[in-house]
Amino acid sequence: MIVVNILQCILYLILIPFCIGISFTKHFDEKYNTLGNILTCGFLSELAVFQVLFLLFYKLDKNLTELTWASSIVLIVISLISVILGFKSYKKIKLPKTDLGFIVFCLFSVYMVVMRNLQGVNDADDSFVIGNALTTLTTNSFYKIDYYTGKLISSESYSRHMLASNSIFIAYLAKVTFIHPTILAHRILGSFVLILHNALIYNISILLFDEKKEKYRPVFASFVSLMTIWDFHSYLTDSTFILTRAWQGKAMFCALAIPAAIMLLLMMGECKGKRIVLYIFTAVLCIAAVSMTPAAIVLLTLFMFAGSICLAFGIKKITVTLKMIPSLLPMAAFGILFYMILK
Image (cartoon, rainbow, N blue to C red; front, side, top):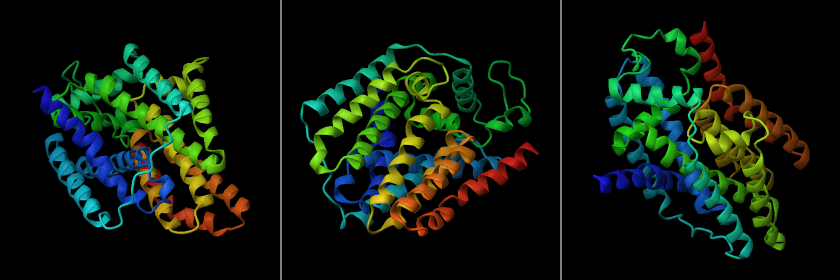
């Protein structure tokens, strides 16, 4: 059984994200075709696909089993199509220079993962996320039965969480991997998110320092890791979210969505061609971010739009901002939907 658990985790957290991710990174400059970018783009795409399917199945009053079959089939089909279409244009994965600085950064990353697994964090948000994941898994329904009391719950009490499919995604992963939601979230998903977070930070360092200043990349990445490790002056800091609640929606937003948005803006400023792929991925990121927290509707929209304006002034191309608007349309749709739910 343990072998099946491991194989299923590899399938849904590595193979599927990798296959989907190459459909985006094959259009990037070769130096950005890194394993970290591939897995991050793929995982965010996986979250986006699941978010759309969850909202559709919730509206149709379907159950978790039906959503699981549909999501698995759709994700596998997309992965196969991505591999088939991307095979001819496949580029060699760019590996980082394994010097002393990179080794130090890797050690910091390992330390973050180890400390995450040694800490036992069970706050109120964790009670909701894991509790709802377990309720969904055991009752096979969405937002209907309180697992602890067995009573029906009103949709109004969950209205502000309705668009965030993060806890449902944990239930989905638990169902396909046959692992308890608590273990899956605290140990496996939390560690995976931390690894992707550090991969994003290193890829941002590649954008900030060209090949002439390549030696500064691991220094920058290590500095950011140190800031994250020691930034515990408040329970509301992004570092606290990232290191103690990596499986929760808000923490995933801090760890993945915001760094990915920064990376996209930097790539748009440097990109000389095929910028359309970056705009498409921005739309994917918007959908994935809302699956983490509905607050992304406002936060990520403002961040990307304001960033595109700064970018337009920097490279003297107003079209950057104009082309960003269609990429943010999913946020407008989510905003309207959220307003209708609260109303």
